[in-house]
Length: 343
Image 1: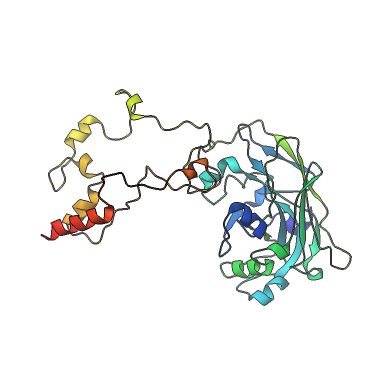
Image 2 (image 1 turned 90 degrees about the horizontal axis):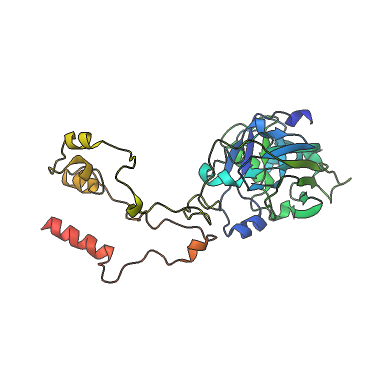
C-alpha cells in the first residue's frame, strides 16, 4: 500500500452524502454528520475481511476517500480542496447486525480489523476536478454502484472545510465521503471491487480496482446481535421472529428480580408524604418535587409502551398513539389538575 495511507492518524467517515442514497433512506440531511473509524481497520487491496460467526448483515459501501496532504485548520470553502493531497477508492464495510446497538457511533459495526480497505493507487488531487469524480462497485463481477460527485448533497470541498473548523486535519488523515445507492449485504465467498476515477480528466486517472474477498469467521463478536430494527436507532420494533417481552402472567414468584430485597424495602426510609420509598420512586416523583416547589419539573408524557418507529418497519403501519374511547384528553386533565391545585 502507498505510504500516505498505510497508517492514517484519523479516519473520518460521513453517514449520508449522496442524493441517491438519501432517496433510498427516505430522508435528506440538512448538514453532514460524521463518525470515526480506527486506523487498525485499514486494509490493502487483495485482502480478506471476516464476517463473524453468528452474523448475517455484512454490507459493502464503495466510496471516494480523500487523503489530506497538508495541515488543515479553519480553512474557507474555496481553499479546502488545495489541502487534499490524493484521492483513492475505499470500501466502508459495516456489520449491520451491530449498528442499532452503536446508536450512530459505528464503533463496533464499522471498526473491525480490515473494515476499511483503501487503494490500490493514489490519484493526485491537483489533476482532477472534485465535482467530476466517479465511484463504481462490483460484486462478483456485477456492477452494483455507479455514481459521480455531481450527485453529492455535500460537495467534497465542503466536507474538508467543515471538518477543519472543529479540529486539525493532518497529512495522511483520510476522509470517507459516503456511498451512493446500491450498497447491499455480502456473504462469504463474495469478491467486492471498488474503483474511483476521473473519466473526463486528461489521461482518465484511476485508483485501480480495490479488491476484497469475504471470508467466514470462526469466532463471533462478544457483543450480542440486536433484536431491534437495524434501519433506525430510534426504532424499537423487534426483528421478524425475535422473541417479544415475557408476559407478566408468565413470571414466577421465584424469578430473580433486580432491586431491593423485601427486608431492605421494609427498612427503607419513608418519603415526605409518608408513603413507602419504593412507591414514591416511580411516577409520583414529579408530584413530590412540585409539592416541595423544587423548580420547574415536567414529565415526559410519551408512553414507553408506544415507542417511535421508523417508516420501513412492518409495525410502522399500526395506528398512531391513540386516545381510548371515553378517556379525558391530556390537555383537559392538565387544566383540571391545575385548577384543583390553585383552588
